[in-house]
Image (cartoon, rainbow, N blue to C red; front, side, top):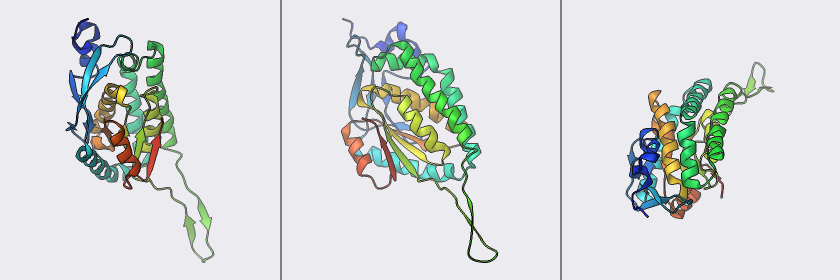
Length: 248
């Protein structure tokens, strides 16, 4: 059996050409791609071949991502909700343009049939469309006050940095369901994907953060932390994350 990583096989040229992956990829994103932890090989479950590698993060890297997501949140939360919705819509459009290559990667790394891999990316696209509409319906109430000449205004405020830990069997859709809604509500997102599908996480994050940066928004609004259970435990214990969504 050839030891050549699949990413260097012309048959899988889309990994480099369309998804901007490399033979070794940094798995942490705080506005820049970096990582200081162990290098992990991503293996195709269908044939046992190495697809490519991801350098994971350590505790210091994790804290760097959280701090960047906190700073980016202040900028993101200040945008009008419809503007946030429009950017999320653009994320959906960008994902739609990568539907086939990203779906192929889901199939290659996770093991789903191709139709389900593509369908999962479509789920993310669909929730972006939904979230765009939601951004124009976020409203509060005007309530009567017991004080003459006064009214009470109900206003929903974002939480801050929302953590998302997604499972291997839906490596794109679960993140999409969580992040699109969290974003239009004014939150930034810190994502940890499953250790066995880290290339999917990196490729998806590249699409999302590219749209943010094209709009002059810090990419750290959608920070990425690749790693194992140590990263997940840090997220679960971190009081800087007021909300954590975990699918296991």
